[in-house]
Image 1: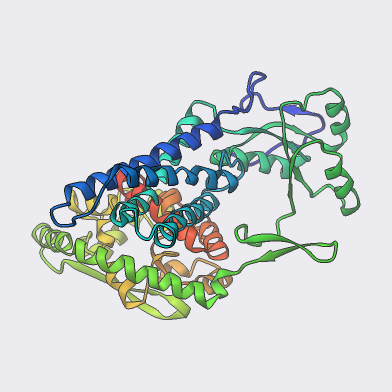
Image 2 (image 1 turned 30 degrees about the vertical axis):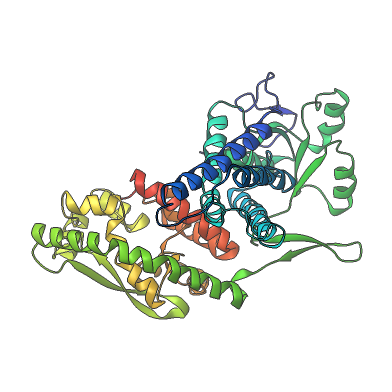
Length: 474
């Protein structure tokens, strides 16, 4: 989608985004709350059935009274999510939604466990309660995602937004909001500052409660009065591009002066140690479970193409070190020769290779098996060993070969060295194999600047979905 927009000289309606009949649906928040309510009680039901079926090994008193107490206590979860601003939560990106949801869920479930221990002295079934807590960490989250997608497909998700500004800045704001429809901020009207008074006087703003103000053409002296003149309950000011992070930014009152505090997680030793701990706790069981599959696939590779089943390559790692990355072999043994032959005299193929160092019809890849392993990323499973060794992380920028890194700026290469490379990353789940060098640099830079544990959790969830679909990888 093009990001070039013509300069505006008058109010511009966007009928492709918002018809005159579009209104914010007041029931979307109630629908999300109902989904949470059903999901949490289903989590409780599943936990009860599991504990009931295991009574021969885990005898417990599952009386009607205590089960009713747990069911009623779980009703506090939708209330906690409501106070966290998640119903409907327009303007929250998926990572922030995940953070707020997990925090509220942990708070409610921990409160129930403390209540049972201190007030009821273990009157509730701890097996049922802990089982419910485990399931409720994921089932309501999945339900919310499905509900939001359902409402987006039917045009029921979002609140109309006024975009105030001229030229490219306002056009880019519209483009970004359209591109990230999950935010629920639907551009309704775009106009210049000079047209604002007449537009407001025409009582055309009755259905809009949020304005996005782009500032390149608005001086500091006029910005404050302009924002104060907007009759909306929410106003978002988009500053000129500073090249700073977007997540972990909090407004701070510096004696009447607005400041922005940036929480730079990459420089906090505690969060880095937590990331490493999660890598070990997740990669170890994943490696144990996937070991039989890796063994079967390795035998299959040797049967299709005699030779080593595994392939390793030296790549750039954390803090400029060189690491050896392991994969199941998906290419012929003479892969480099085949690549040279494919690039020789083929301008289109060479251009495709230079664009992203990938070929959609790669002559090096083993037919059938090689493409299957790449499509579902099964060839990456041996890298769980790299994660356990501390050379890689589950989530991070991909470890590029040195010939690949040579095409990036020195600044970006130094930036990548701040984090351990990952098996999966933001650009892999966003565009998979369909990306050029500029896209790779942009998304990796965004990840490094905005890194958090919640972003890693979000990327891992999207990775699972992308791998199961098998789209975009080759």
